[in-house]
Image (tube, rainbow, N blue to C red):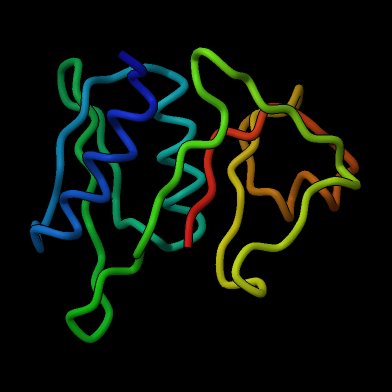
Length: 124
Protein backbone atom coordinates (compact mmCIF):
# COMPACT_ATOMS: atom_id res chain seq x y z
CA UNK A 1 0.00 0.00 0.00
CA UNK A 2 1.01 3.60 -0.57
CA UNK A 3 2.59 5.11 2.60
CA UNK A 4 2.03 8.73 1.43
CA UNK A 5 -1.67 8.06 0.83
CA UNK A 6 -1.87 6.47 4.29
CA UNK A 7 -0.41 9.63 5.85
CA UNK A 8 -2.79 11.93 3.98
CA UNK A 9 -5.83 9.82 4.86
CA UNK A 10 -4.72 9.64 8.51
CA UNK A 11 -4.65 13.45 8.62
CA UNK A 12 -8.05 13.70 6.89
CA UNK A 13 -9.61 11.09 9.21
CA UNK A 14 -8.11 12.82 12.25
CA UNK A 15 -9.86 16.04 11.22
CA UNK A 16 -13.14 14.20 10.63
CA UNK A 17 -12.90 12.58 14.09
CA UNK A 18 -12.06 16.00 15.66
CA UNK A 19 -8.76 14.71 17.09
CA UNK A 20 -6.12 17.07 18.45
CA UNK A 21 -3.19 15.20 16.92
CA UNK A 22 -2.38 12.19 14.77
CA UNK A 23 0.74 10.00 14.58
CA UNK A 24 2.15 8.54 11.35
CA UNK A 25 5.29 6.45 10.68
CA UNK A 26 8.40 8.52 9.91
CA UNK A 27 10.07 8.96 6.54
CA UNK A 28 11.99 11.93 5.14
CA UNK A 29 9.47 12.41 2.32
CA UNK A 30 6.49 12.40 4.70
CA UNK A 31 8.31 14.92 6.90
CA UNK A 32 8.79 17.23 3.88
CA UNK A 33 5.08 17.01 3.03
CA UNK A 34 4.22 17.75 6.67
CA UNK A 35 6.53 20.80 6.60
CA UNK A 36 4.72 22.14 3.52
CA UNK A 37 1.35 21.68 5.28
CA UNK A 38 2.73 23.37 8.41
CA UNK A 39 4.06 26.32 6.39
CA UNK A 40 0.62 26.66 4.76
CA UNK A 41 -0.93 26.77 8.27
CA UNK A 42 -3.18 23.77 7.59
CA UNK A 43 -1.67 21.74 10.42
CA UNK A 44 -0.04 22.79 13.67
CA UNK A 45 3.36 21.80 14.94
CA UNK A 46 5.04 18.66 13.72
CA UNK A 47 7.52 16.68 15.80
CA UNK A 48 9.62 13.58 15.22
CA UNK A 49 9.43 11.17 18.14
CA UNK A 50 11.20 7.80 17.84
CA UNK A 51 10.24 6.59 14.35
CA UNK A 52 6.94 8.50 14.25
CA UNK A 53 5.78 11.95 13.18
CA UNK A 54 3.35 13.67 15.56
CA UNK A 55 1.09 16.10 13.70
CA UNK A 56 -1.03 18.64 15.58
CA UNK A 57 -4.37 19.35 13.88
CA UNK A 58 -5.75 22.90 13.71
CA UNK A 59 -9.38 23.98 13.79
CA UNK A 60 -10.95 27.36 13.03
CA UNK A 61 -14.31 28.04 14.72
CA UNK A 62 -14.59 24.28 15.38
CA UNK A 63 -14.22 23.59 11.64
CA UNK A 64 -11.32 21.62 10.20
CA UNK A 65 -8.68 23.56 8.27
CA UNK A 66 -8.56 20.77 5.67
CA UNK A 67 -11.83 19.58 4.15
CA UNK A 68 -10.41 17.28 1.47
CA UNK A 69 -7.08 15.69 0.57
CA UNK A 70 -6.86 13.82 -2.71
CA UNK A 71 -3.84 11.79 -3.82
CA UNK A 72 -3.03 12.56 -7.48
CA UNK A 73 0.14 10.63 -8.32
CA UNK A 74 -0.25 7.00 -7.28
CA UNK A 75 2.08 4.01 -7.24
CA UNK A 76 0.53 2.58 -10.40
CA UNK A 77 0.16 5.89 -12.24
CA UNK A 78 2.62 8.71 -11.68
CA UNK A 79 1.38 12.19 -12.63
CA UNK A 80 3.84 14.91 -13.63
CA UNK A 81 3.18 18.56 -14.45
CA UNK A 82 5.18 21.34 -16.05
CA UNK A 83 5.13 24.72 -14.34
CA UNK A 84 2.77 26.19 -16.95
CA UNK A 85 0.29 23.31 -16.39
CA UNK A 86 -0.13 23.96 -12.64
CA UNK A 87 -3.61 25.40 -12.18
CA UNK A 88 -5.61 26.77 -9.25
CA UNK A 89 -7.90 24.45 -7.28
CA UNK A 90 -11.36 25.55 -6.13
CA UNK A 91 -10.77 29.13 -7.29
CA UNK A 92 -7.54 29.49 -5.33
CA UNK A 93 -8.86 27.99 -2.07
CA UNK A 94 -6.84 24.81 -2.54
CA UNK A 95 -3.40 23.93 -3.81
CA UNK A 96 -1.20 21.13 -5.08
CA UNK A 97 1.82 19.68 -3.31
CA UNK A 98 4.53 18.98 -5.87
CA UNK A 99 7.84 17.15 -5.59
CA UNK A 100 10.32 19.17 -7.66
CA UNK A 101 14.08 18.83 -8.18
CA UNK A 102 14.45 21.66 -5.61
CA UNK A 103 12.35 19.87 -2.98
CA UNK A 104 8.70 19.46 -1.99
CA UNK A 105 6.62 22.65 -2.30
CA UNK A 106 3.17 23.99 -3.08
CA UNK A 107 1.99 24.43 -6.66
CA UNK A 108 2.14 28.22 -6.36
CA UNK A 109 5.77 28.15 -5.21
CA UNK A 110 6.72 25.74 -8.00
CA UNK A 111 4.98 27.92 -10.59
CA UNK A 112 6.73 31.05 -9.26
CA UNK A 113 10.11 29.31 -9.46
CA UNK A 114 9.24 27.90 -12.91
CA UNK A 115 9.62 24.30 -11.73
CA UNK A 116 7.61 21.22 -12.61
CA UNK A 117 7.58 17.82 -11.00
CA UNK A 118 5.47 14.99 -9.64
CA UNK A 119 2.04 16.08 -8.39
CA UNK A 120 1.73 14.41 -4.98
CA UNK A 121 -1.75 15.55 -3.92
CA UNK A 122 -4.32 18.32 -3.98
CA UNK A 123 -5.70 19.90 -0.80
CA UNK A 124 -8.62 22.20 -0.12
